[in-house]
Image 1 (cartoon, rainbow, N blue to C red):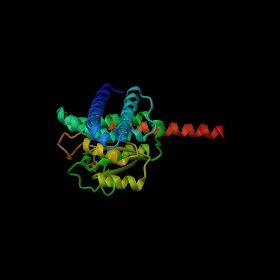
Image 2: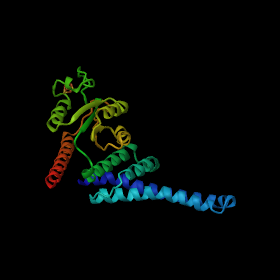
Image 3: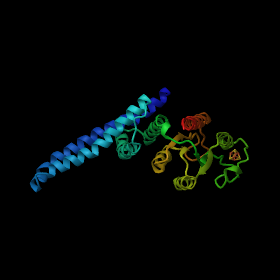
Length: 268
Ligand code: SF4
């Protein structure tokens, strides 16, 4: 893994551990404050309250520990997969709140979250089927002067070279990936529901990617951030190298799966 990717995902992980510590302090404080009143009602109530708090903390702390070890060591310890979602869904708003408090921009935290998510996809590759990959692109990648309606059908692109859409279409065809333009989260969800992909490669800004990754669950979403040199949602671009890297990753995965299937069949 490249050093800047490690540093990028480190921010989310550090803040997430900080959030767990805060959660622990809040729950201990609540237990301390409620203990006398609960005991007055019934002697077993404080015990039940304590058990509930422990049941909240265990999946979150355990999930974060497994995520941290997995993404730093590159070893897949994330079984069952759902634990990652419980952890991230619970901690993400607390992490954003902490970031605000520490004057860290939301976009930096979201970028870091996307980096963690992509690392999780890399380490869990053996559990991801790459048979049907869908790539979702934001409409703002299209040059603003382009007259062709690529949102209706991406094949309307005339490959003029003014934006990267033409190159992306060629790359997607080469790797056998279904390519669609999503003008928003609702369309993205609709396309995913129609095509039922086994995995998604999504290009978007920090906010749309983080919500897309969460919304698409249980479909794994490999996120690639777009660049916005002209401001938000206007003539954006994306690193074609990163796209190719993602295509290569999933096509290698497909080959590995086929090899496994092939050897299984031979054994039969
Ligand atoms: S490459 Fe395609 S989408 Fe981009 S400006 Fe040219 S015709 Fe339009």
